[in-house]
Image (cartoon, rainbow, N blue to C red; front, side):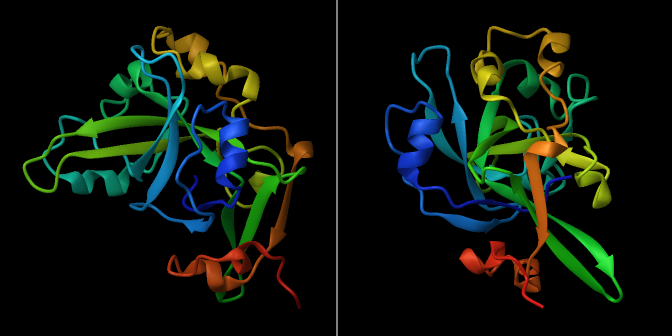
Length: 224
C-alpha cells in the first residue's frame, strides 16, 4: 500500500528528470495524502511532448455516480489491474507517472504507530506507476483523478507492509506512457518490486501522522 508520500524536489529538477518542456508549477510537499492534489506526467496521443498536470489522489472512474468512490481507490494492485472494472480502461489508455522522492509506512510499537520514511539510496526523485481518469459528475465535477499502483513488497518494505508502490525504471517511462501499447502482459512486466539494496528506511517523527503537517521536518530522522 502507499497512503502517504513526499515530493520535495524542485520544479526545475522535476522538469529535467521527466523530460518536460515546461517547468511545473510546484512547491515542495512532504506529506501528500489521499484526496489532495499531486503531480502526474502524461503523454497524450495528439501531443508530441510529455505534459505535467495536477490530479486528485483517489481515482474516480468515468462511470461513477459519486466522486466519493475515489477515497477508496488510492491504490490499484498491479496483479489485477487489467481486469478490475474500476481500473481496466485506464490501464489500457490512461497511464501516468507520479513523481515522488519518498513515501511512508508505519509499524506498531507499543501503543503508538511509528512512521518510517522510505526513499531511494541516492535520495533522488522517482516515478510511481499511476493511472488517471477524467470524471464528469453532476455534483462537483469535472475532476481529473489518479491512483498509484502497488506490487508485492521487497525485503526492506516487507518489514512494514506486504505491498509497496511500483517504482518504474526510467528506461520504461516511454513504454508506460504510450497509450498505443495495450498488451497487459507487456505492461505488467514493468510492475515489479524495486530492489531493496537501492532503498533506505528510517524512523521519523509522529508529526507526519497528521496530514496537516507538511514541512521538511516530516522527513527528518527521529532523534531519540
